Image (tube, rainbow, N blue to C red; front, top):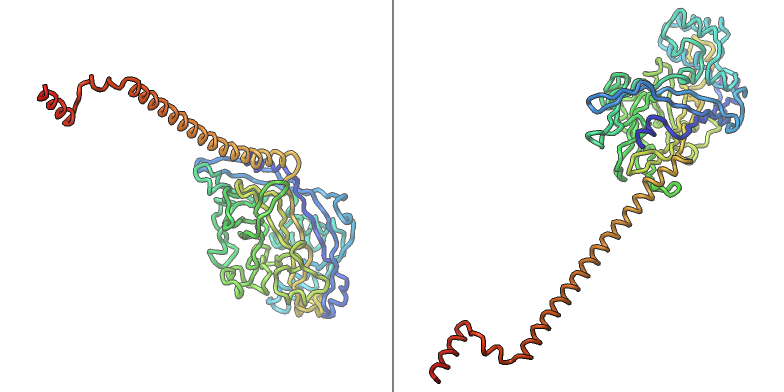
Length: 456
C-alpha cells in the first residue's frame, strides 16, 4: 500500500497563493513605510506524476516527478484576472545585484529600464504574475545575456514550476534496512549541494518529503530535502493527535529553521544573513536578492514586522506542519507554508529605486496542502487501526484461553490424583490382613521376621 501511495498519490493536493498588494506605491518611493493588504487565496489543484521509475541493485529507486497546476475558481477568493501591485523583481532585484558595479554601468542599467518602460512596481493580473507575461526587457536580456534569467519565455513567479519536474531523485527502498526507507541517496546525481558555505548546510538529508521510515517515536524528527528551498529542512515533534480515528504525531518547524547564524550557529553556512526568520536563497536563484520565510514573518525577528504595515502572524494560519501516522511514516495531513520576499533599497545611479527605504518586502506566500480522505482513508483505517486492534484483542483472547486451558488441566490432574488416592485407601481398609501376608522388606521387616522365628 505504501508503494502504491508513493507511485500514484491518491489524495488531491492544492496550492493556495496569497498576494501582498501594495496600497501606497508612490509613498514607498518617497521613503515611507510600505502598506500591504493580503489578497487571496487563489487556489490551484496540484497534480504530481512520477516518471522513469527505475529500481537499482543497491536497494534504491530513481524517478522524475512532474507537477502541474490547475486553477480552482470555486475554492478561490477571486479570479486570475484580479489585478494586484507587487515589487518588480526585474528592476528592484537587478538594482541590488548591480549595487557594486561602476556608477556608469548603473546609469546604463537605469537607461535600459526606461527604454523598456519597466518601473519599480508591477500592476498586473494574478494569472500574469503567476505564470508569466510578455516583457520586452526579458526578451532583450535572454538575447544578449543568456542564462541571466531562470526562464527563457514569459517571466512569472511560478513560470518555471508549472509542467516541470523537481529533479532526478534516487531514494532507498528500505528492502534490507527499513530505517532507510524513502531516504534520499542522491538528487540530480549529487550527494551534496554546492549552494552554501559549510558541508553541514550542503548535506542532502532525509526523504523527498512524501513518505518517511516507519516506527516513529516522539524523539523522531522529519528531515527532508526541498529543491525549491535549495536545502534540507527538519521538522520536530510537537504533539500527538487523532484524525478520524487514526492516531498521529504532529511535526512542526522549529524556531531555528530560518534563524540566522548569530542566533543559531549551525545556520552560519546559509549566510550572508539578515534578521532571524529569513533564508537567503540568492545563491540558488541567480543571485537575485530573494529571501524565504514563514508567512507574515511568523517566528521571525519582530523588527521585520515594524518595516511593513498590514502583517499579522499567527501559528494557526501561518505555521507549517505535517501530521504523520507514526507506525507507517505516511503523512495524513500536510500544510507547507512559505513566503517569498524581495530585499530592496535605494541604489544610486538607478533612478527607479528613487528614495526607497531598505526593507525586506513580502510579495506572496503560498500553502501546499493535502490530506487523506475518502476510500483511501477507509482502507488506511481498516488496515492500520481496526485490524491491529482486532489482532491485539485476539492476542489477549488467546492468552486468556491458554491460561484457562492450564487451569482446567491442573484441576483435572488434581481430581484424578485424588480419585486414585481414595481408591488405594479403600483397598487398605477393606482388607486389613492383606499386608501381613505379603513379604516384608527393609531393615524393619527383617527384624520382625527374626523375632517371629525365635518365638516359634
